[in-house]
Length: 412
Ligand code: NAD
Image 1 (cartoon, rainbow, N blue to C red):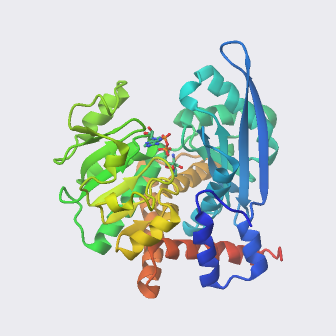
Image 2: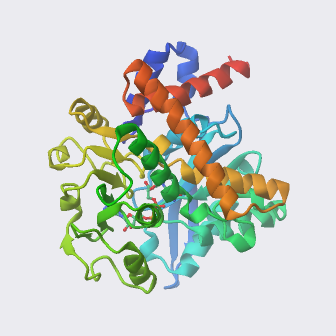
């Protein structure tokens, strides 16, 4: 059995039991279908050679081409990438996207590498995995430490072998066939999910509902901007160094502008500086972890004041903390639903590339809203009918669809 360092297998095993999935099918769903580990030598700026390790893990392709981001992070090890790949499988199924699940990673610290080194590393990675990816095989996208620029380099490197093929990666710059709305999609989806939950739980979409967000990268900063536009009060945000807290609500447009001009959260003078450990204990209706995994654990959950956690990051709540918080009445919206906006607009990007056509942003956001609403309603329906947590309901819906596809394809 594959064990994961983040424990998503516990949620999987619970779903397998609840759904009575036959042993053989469960074993096929448990294992990644293909794993590739590659060594990536590059010429460093100081003249020496650096050798990095990269992974592409294709967890399950029963419902379509594999799909998933590539993470550049010092802790991007094989177990973590395996675990994230399986989450992608359940996420694409839950959202009814015609994809399987995959994930990639390079063990590196992108903040310590120059642009030249990052470009070489990215191109070498794609040259080493190009034979297993492609528009109908496996479509990489951005994740932690990667962005539109990285995706442009990936598309170009893939094209050197296979010819010009924009549908080979998503999250590209708009000028290279990227989709309008892709950059903001994950954060936007988080807030669409929150709006649906607000209707269900009866909290208001205005300043009376306060939010604390951990991580101010792609997902966290867009979630903050969209929540601010919707009228919520964002009382705290953080990055890797520290957080900032203002009980009257932060001026998010000013903060975004400050960061765009090269400022940091630490140097923003509109609130009190706090640590990431303190951020969890901030007095906020909603806590949105949007950075790394294992943010809420059994050791720090007593500090959490929020009654709702929306998992914008992958695996931010450990399984034991998840169980304990659920028993204390904390509502947790799981990653596979909460951050599904990114892969959904990646699907729109892939579709536009195949059609050689561009949709406008209004259409993108409206189709995203519809898909998130549908997914939320299907999960909410199961939660209400079977008295389940949102996590158990979401995992059961996603896993049941993949199990059905495996059986229909006649693998076993
Ligand atoms: P990013 O690299 O753009 O930003 C990460 C943010 O987290 C930065 O502000 C960074 O300073 C902060 N951070 C890093 N380590 C931290 C730590 N130890 N403590 C506190 N803050 C820390 O990454 P992203 O793309 O925004 O991804 C964030 C999370 O969302 C990840 O879990 C990722 O897998 C998930 N996710 C991303 C996407 C996407 O479209 N980018 C889609 C789905 C899920």
